Length: 310
Image 1 (cartoon, rainbow, N blue to C red):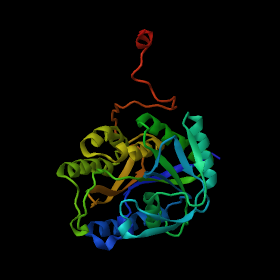
Image 2: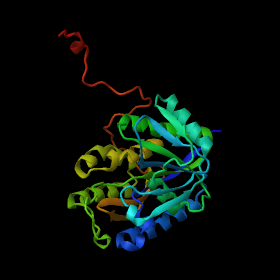
Image 3: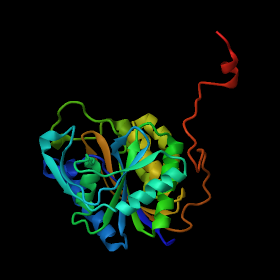
Image 4: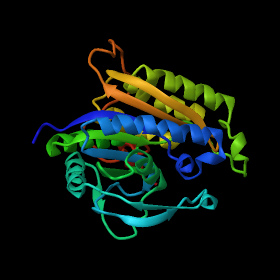
């Protein structure tokens, strides 16, 4: 099959509070209510797979794809256990997980599927699926965020996702589960008084959202390094790198910013991106690109250094 394609993509918050306790904060309630607009768009689409890259599922060695067809368990957020627990029973596309794993390996990545009872599925993915796919009408896929991967490796992971989507014939909605600025308050706050951690973070978040609202996903991907330096971007904004790569690295999208609110100091946004032709203009990109991962570069060693004897 070769008719698989990405129908659209959404950036959604990585914290579960708008799902678990929306009534405790006007900001969380606003996000909770805005999820309904995103859910309606997804339900109206022809999607048969929701593919998630979540910064809350951290892997160390390579990249993992969830392959348990029906994970059923409980989870407690490691930061916000006082808000209770989440039960989940999901429908995972195990065949797609295997295809994604194979496509990732073909591009030089270390990848494997995971499938066992009680595997700790992350709260970001769980809360996103509860809000956007509560009855499991659409099968899901989840891929981990490697904490040590750089931009090049993450781009290759996104291209492997595009390969798998094409091979599988799936019609896919991508979800990037990620904060924007990711500076959290380290002390207890009154949820009613939640706010973005700093004015600087807020300004950078709004600039990024302005670009995303114009559909300029690849521009945001290019800007992510600087954003992370200035606003402590969530996991260096790897979710943005992955989404941009999986969707073809262009600015040809219609963008919609559904909401933007603080969640315990972080920048939480709901953003939609729908492919549309000839909207990107002749924009110039500066970041490097790569199609295959060939291992980490040893930037400290050179041939000359190796010749030096003690």
